[in-house]
Structure formats: C-alpha cells, structure tokens
Length: 139
Image 1 (spheres, one colour):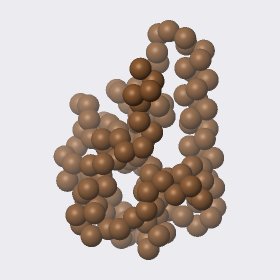
Image 2 (spheres, one colour):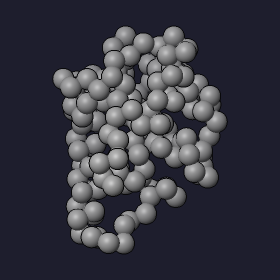
Image 3 (cartoon, helix red, strand yellow):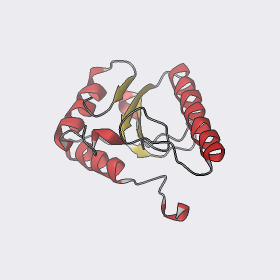
C-alpha cells in the first residue's frame, strides 16, 4: 500500500503546475539544493511553493484523521513531517525566499475551491512580492 503513495507529481501539484504554466509562469521542480526540496521554485520571483497532502503533513482540516492502528508509529511519523516542514520553511525564509503552502483541501473535499480560483490566488501571490502564506480550502 505505502509503495503507491507519491511524494512528487501528486494530483494537486500537477493541477497547480499546469495552471501556472498556462499563465506564463516558469519554475523548477524539486530543487535538491534548497531546504525541503520545494515542489515548485520560481527563481524570478524568489518564491517557492509546497503542495502538501493534508494527511501526511497533519493539516487541521476535515481530510486529516489520526489512524486507528499503529497509533504511536503514525503519530511519530506525521509529527516529524510537521517538524521537517517548519525547519525547511524557516531555512528558506532565512535564505530570503518567500514560501507558499498550498494544502490538498484547496482542491478536494468539502472545502475545495475551483481550480482556477486557487491558481489565480497563487499567481497573484507570486507577482505581489508579499511574504509567506498558506492557501487552503474555505472553512
């Protein structure tokens, strides 16, 4: 089962990539030289985007639920993912990058938004030069 879980090229990530590319944004993918290997890197805008799954990154939304079996294993694993996310974001900000986190619930579940609305919000953030942000479904 775990072998089928993707870390790259997830459906929300692909939707966002296609939409931003269609709008003329160019980016690099999973740049290993940056902390946390961000999903999308926009060198021209000095910005990075992380597209996070609500389960794997312990997002406090309706898509996240603690597993009922192997509770200690999952709690340790998922909480470490959160710690790594915070460490990577802090290192990126310290290096002068702007960081945007787009959560899976922006694209699916009962709080999902229209894909074009999410893409438009991300595009507006990229060109605005504003600081760090989190984008999720409407709650």
